Length: 310
Length: 273
Ligand SMILES: Nc1ncnc2c1ncn2[C@@H]1O[C@H](COP(=O)(O)OP(=O)(O)OP(=O)(O)O)[C@@H](O)[C@H]1O
Ligand SMILES: [Mg+2]
Image 1 (cartoon, rainbow over the protein chains, first blue to last red):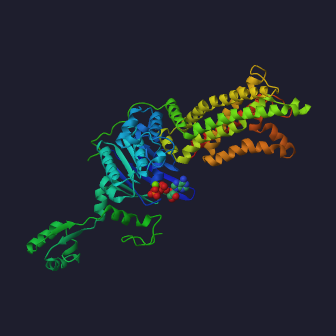
Image 2 (cartoon, helix red, strand yellow):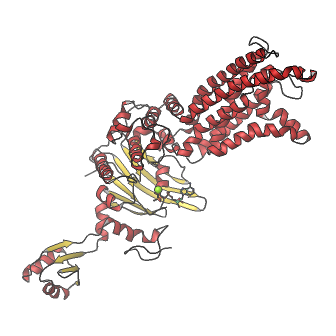
Image 3 (tube, rainbow over the protein chains, first blue to last red):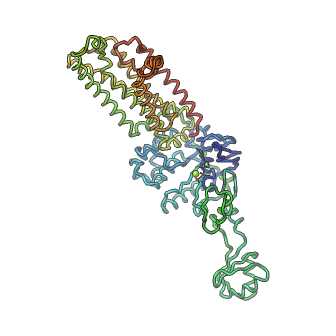
């Protein structure tokens, strides 16, 4: 539904997007990840025809964005939630957008209700909180009931209830068969929301993969075992594989899967209280992957990202 | 979930047209708070200045020399409010675009209507729809109020049916509408509200003030051909032989605005949002 081929954008010396090729499929939420300055927003702006690519193409539903007869009915986008005229009411903000695409006025009331802003429809947006503006931006994206949705950091400024709401909204949009592309730095949220990931760093594609595969590939083969007879179990296992202690009753085993460990424990008469394959979080997997392509980093990064990066 | 087995909702039918875009721009200019402020302020100032100017000029008239009496221009006195109105309507024209860059709503506008020529054309048309009636109100109101103030003071005055009066009132309104488009074009190129306002002040008022002080031919040329000075001849009754006549003067301004608009359309189409 969104297809990007060889997309490149150069701002003077800065190569913001570098020969990017990927596709965003319908029926899925695709997380668009990358460190600050990776080129996510620039890519989305080119997809929406706001910035002209230096080279390459981007199409939505098979044609360049600008060629759609009524673009808001083809793609809904939230690029910059702060982008409202403070003196204009929420309702007028949406009415103007709806009018430009021949979308009936009643849709304005519908989307305002959908994002929970119906009570403040006639208030000037200058009085809105960050989260309310974010909701207004999402309402604008939904106006044309489009089959493709593009959100650049839609979670910024949302309260926990709002974040859960967005998660549900994205999931529902994808379940309805829409293509949803969403950038965010909140890995825990992306992990809960996205089916597919596109990761970029310094403008280049770093990963284009299903979420599960992305995490599994980086999870290693560690298994956590808890047992009141941890020492005995350790003696049994350490002959064959690598084992390290994790607390008084825990072991982290590398080299055997859960079934094999369970079988060995059972054969040796060792009682088990926990047996889990360890999964890294998306956050950890993301940071491992992008460590070398981080544009702006902190000198004293938290654990797991201690290396100094150029 | 398999994506291939699921068909996404197809985009609903219906093609967005220029009229849709015009409607959107109309909603926007109507709901921009500065629009009302500029309109009310400009009308009040234009007509107020005509009343004050008429009274003051009328009171001075008896003390004028014969030469000054010969160049006494009741038309220009009543329409002097155009000097500030051109800047404020120019500001309105600029705001139609610069407010969108300032608040970044240009992103939403161009996402909704990626055809940029259409967007800028719709902005120009709605601007004219606001600026022209306001300009007519200022010029006609200023004329009537100013002439009656002159009459009350016993100074020479003219009627709307007198030669040149209608030309000055209607032509003055056209000039102010051109000034609004001048602001639109300049704002589109510059994008920043403050920088555009500074430019408008410079081009429309400061050059006018300094032009006579410029040396020799440059000064003569500027006083005669500088578009806002030349265009301003449309509201005068007294003819200075060193200056352009009313309609050629207004044409000078019109050509200048046309060139700026062409540049604005080119820049708007070409540049990143
Ligand atoms: N208009 C511009 N002029 C010059 N450089 C730009 C411009 N827009 C973006 N850049 C540069 O392009 C690079 C990519 O920026 P972009 O905003 O796309 O990153 P991002 O992935 O969205 O980052 P973030 O996560 O911080 O939002 C950055 O180095 C940025 O400085
Ligand atoms: Mg960004």
